[in-house]
Length: 398
Ligand SMILES: Nc1nc2c(ncn2[C@@H]2O[C@H](COP(=O)(O)OP(=O)(O)OP(=O)(O)O)[C@@H](O)[C@H]2O)c(=O)[nH]1
Ligand SMILES: [Zn+2]
Image (cartoon, rainbow, N blue to C red):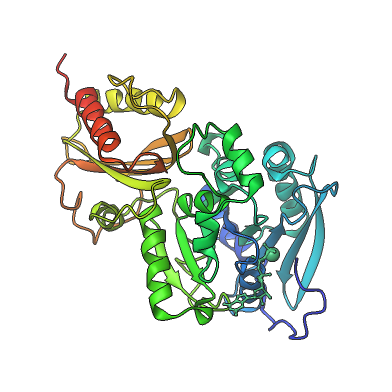
């Protein structure tokens, strides 16, 4: 919860509610400018999420930020507190959702409620959603990752996961009994148990390792290694008391769902240890892709993500994909970007995305790479099966 009796008064931030109208008036606005980014802030109980939000709301970033708290997840409360820092004050509103679970209710009413509120108060520059410590961000992200065509006025910018440096290893190693029961219901099929901490780390675009003041350097090193063995794609930051002086690119304006940076894919492919056998990162390579092969790749992705069937391999079972990113070079030199969270994926043109002109095209692989983060993927057998299946799918001549 936001601290009501917070003794430090917020530093006053001049809200700039006229940005949008100003841009419109000068005819410079297109739909992209009008869309408001939303970042999901997640992390286990007590990791420092609220501390981070308070830090952001009082930092001098010159943005009008709305904060939605999903603290009442499982209780009977149906309203979500919404704090907006506007001009010289923080205003609290209540966002009414259809039921207590944001995963179920936000799709129908949450996005609408945010849009209605923007109609009334003027657009925000940014929305931050704090999930409960027990939330699985993979259930929430797709609700905001809405099709361009649906004309939503908000878009998913990324997922930031706060990690409690002191407690995270225990959370990963000793799932609670509720988590164990949940795991059972979600196709646990034996094997190492999946904890909420695993899910929050595997879906992250940015991992903020917080509470570094409470651990030794050796302990911190162990935490970093373990976390990057789970998710090698996310950028990692170390902090204490959730202090992130430069918010841009770390919490704000991540573009984690509309950009894929070659350097991060290269980094993710560099042999990381498989310290955690539950969830890990694998990298698949691709040859240069023709249009026809791109269609085959699309079919392969649909099979893998929608039907959980790895074409040509009926023996590989028990896997689950959380996050997927790729960068492909077409035979004509065009770049295609691949983005996915759970079963939702998108292949988009890289050319009209203003990104990575400074990156070496395609990284070290001439064709491209797909990096997948998920459960029971990182064993050598499974990784090999994925690569072979993909090779067959895109190489086959017709
Ligand atoms: N020592 C230390 N304490 C911290 C740090 N960051 C946050 N805390 C404290 O940890 C406690 C939990 O922080 P919160 O920000 O409320 O954590 P949260 O993730 O929002 O917690 P829930 O909403 O309960 O899941 C608070 O007492 C914070 O003051 C840190 O880096 N070091
Ligand atoms: Zn909190």
